[in-house]
Amino acid sequence: MIASGNHPDSDRPGEVLGTVLILGAGMAGLQCAARLTDSGVPVVLLDKGSRAGGRMATRPVEGALADYGAQYVEALSHEFRLQLKQWQSAGMARLWGFGFEGESTPSGLARYAIEGGMNRLPAHLGQSLNIRLRTEVERIALDGDHWLVSQTDGPSWRVPALVLTCPVPQALTLIDRGGIPLDRTLARKLDTVLYDPCFTLLLRLAGESRVPCPGALALDGQPLYWIADNRQKGVAGSSSEGTVLTLHAGPEFSTSHFDDDRDRVIRLMEHAAEPYLGAPILARHLHRWRYSRARTPLVERFLTLHESPLLLLAGDACGGRDVESAALSGIAAATALLERRPQWVSLAC
Image 1 (cartoon, rainbow, N blue to C red):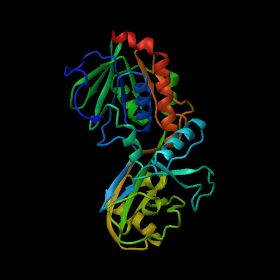
Image 2: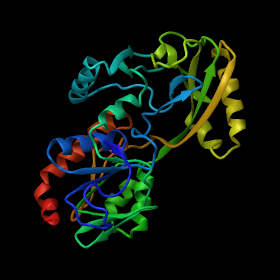
Image 3: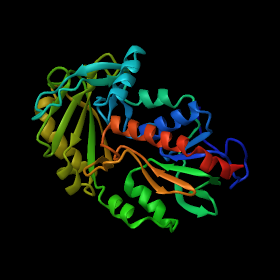
Image 4: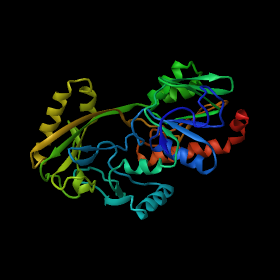
């Protein structure tokens, strides 16, 4: 149930609920919410975006679809491999390859594309969850033995347990605005988490591209480090002709040009991609990811930032920096919440 609005149980701002509130409806937030919901815990996810999924993002470009965030899913852990097999059996995921041309050190792991685009997976996971989209949180603050979560435009939420799955710098901003005391060791650890930005340019072509089979190419990163052909990848669209190329810029280029004029960035990336176009460009779309990937992720799957009331941090920067790490981080946070359930549920009574 993806929706927008006030509390699921009341229209009165600030009412005490036995609800876990999760900020961020990316893979970590969705997996955390799903595990809690399956255990009978009422959960609400808040996300400032217009769709769930975070960087598992797909969009239409002139009659065709393109993935413009995460490009594939792979699994190192036994737990996530089982999940991938379930999605594959359900027709959600399909094998794309074990490595791509240009990679200096391929992982050798099976890489899966999501049928219909990467965003189809979080949309599927969020179908039965209470997600409030286009909801921006301004600050979080202690309110006795609860958390008071203030929206930029809307009512506040007063809940006994809170999970932050947004990028670490955004989480720290919310914590700082609320004057929430953090353990010094935790604060120093969080300060070490750095992110690389990324420009993503989508080019709608009138015909086929020159990207080699199976539709992906790794480059040196300056300015491009990744090109994918969404038609070869199997991302379906309404058009029967042409394709959309996804171009990811490298971290150094993205950092040095992040505040540049968008048209200049497009020209530079498009020029670098010329050998792989193969057909005239019909449309262009540039997206800027400020927090594309954690350059220095945490070792832990999640962190407990505050014990009572309970505040947890999860996300793709916890234990890794990809789709699998985000999913496992959300699951780990949910497990911790369930183990401490008597602690925070008693606060809602």
